[in-house]
Length: 137
Image: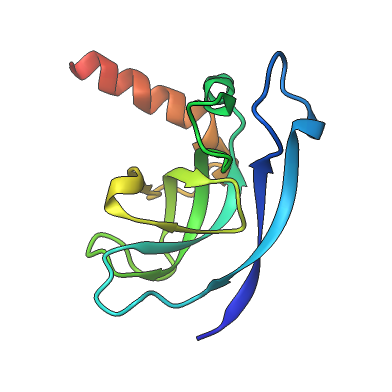
């Protein structure tokens, strides 16, 4: 079981007003790059992270210090039947190098089309997908 450094962006304190770099801190922890036996989680290496206006609400006292947002990641290991090692995914993740995502942590979506830059999956393509979901309701 390899343990690696995992840099994370956390809030120093809850933000009032416009967020500034000084409101955040980069902290180092370690993470084991092996899922526990029988886990249905997915271990991700984050490649791109979004910074969206809705995240401002996540910087208030009602939320944890760990920043979350949309991201693009590569699956390193999976206990979930829908994902396998090497898959590219986008969805809810944390602002950190490696994330452990479980079924209750949010949804992940496989990236099937790589003929556009992967960073598009944190912005314009996500916006289009959300609009499509809203139109289906």
